[in-house]
Length: 211
Image: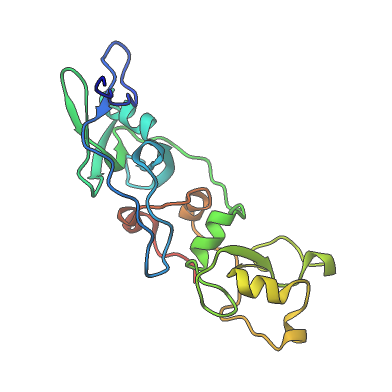
């Protein structure tokens, strides 16, 4: 049986593609009920910082490696697994956080989009009703009864509570919210709203999440 070749993940123009040398670590569920386990390296995102260390976006791994190889960015934090990519002439530690070599101006955008990933991060993957592991989202005032799809009316929820609540109001069930839901604030929340598996190494650059 022929040897399996490593999968190329990208390189600068004119250079040999870079490929992962180390095997993928096993993916295991989090017994503590935290965020989902890390995705395979080929689907991971890399936090991109401005030259001033302001968070800009989460890049696909391929794009991050290309920026590094082209000299347009530098590694701030490598991946905790210590994985390495290499080409015929060089090697590079898989990054978790990178920083642009030159400053780019970003237009101000105040409103944070409501996404499932952002909502789960805001509520720390905990059910707003019982405090258990959240698996879905729920409208506090059901949409069938006039509730809106907003940060103030959406919460993380476990499947059991979601099924029991159905289209009822909290007053009809005698339930209370553990925390009053609100829209998160801060530029980093625009980034987090679209990222499912934010690396803990990103947190010092993202600031404190809203409760």
